[in-house]
Amino acid sequence: MSKVLIIGASGFIGSALYKELNSYFDTYGTYHTDNDFYEKNQKFFQYDMELEDITILLDNLKPKVIVSAIRGNFNSQLDAHYRIINWITKHKSKLLFLSSANVFDSFSNYPSYEYDKTLSESVYGRFKIKIENALMRLPTSRYAILRIPMIFGAKTPRVEELKMLHDLNAPIEVFPNVIINATHIAKLTQQVHYIINRNKKGVFHLGSTDLSYHYDLIREICDMLALDDPIYKQVFDSNNDRYLAVIPKDNMLPKNLQLTIEEVIESVVIKPK
Image 1 (cartoon, one colour):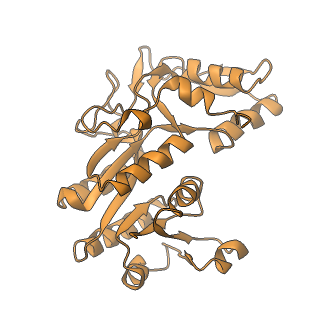
Image 2 (tube, one colour):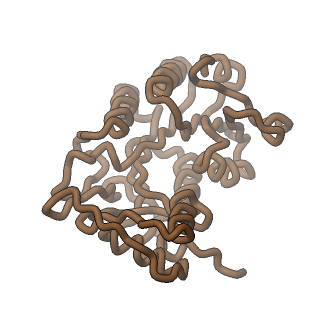
């Protein structure tokens, strides 16, 4: 059974990945803040990337696959990822890096595909690009870059925020001329599972195969959640339509692992079994 280490397994994406992978792989994870559950679970290791060298854990655990789902200080993240990359060059290991649609946020006239040039105006996007570029200097067999758009789904942070803003009678920001794609957490974890299991490599865009205006998507999600008369604050950051979408084209996953915007909308409600 392959040994998998999820860096940031106590976070939103990391914990969902741990639940998906744990029954199929010898799965381990890191957590940051003191927590009785993680401290008692021998498959979790406390790790503070601002104070500790991740190499020590890697040397002890020797994972076959490392999944990076960590969040926090960008400079500390960069240092940790450079150390991971240096480590996998010396071991038979592979890094799955969870990147973002923001690596393309300077391009606005069209959606982006896997091997399009990256360019970002945001600090977050440029940070992700630095790690991607470092990975791309390795043999392709040593990495998979997983670019992810907005994530929805029942009880996800974005959906919980929509509910909270509605309950507070506060405005929900929407972008009427931004065209996006999206995903939901259950499908994302299945896609990562498949990529690990089939030893896939290269660059993947793990978003819906179709597009939506941001305003339309949020409005339909609010309708699905049965939120009465939500207040929308329309934000126009451009006079023209602007794309922020990572569309899969070159590295298509099987049909059952592809998804549509409609599925994203439906995912925000837990259906009775």
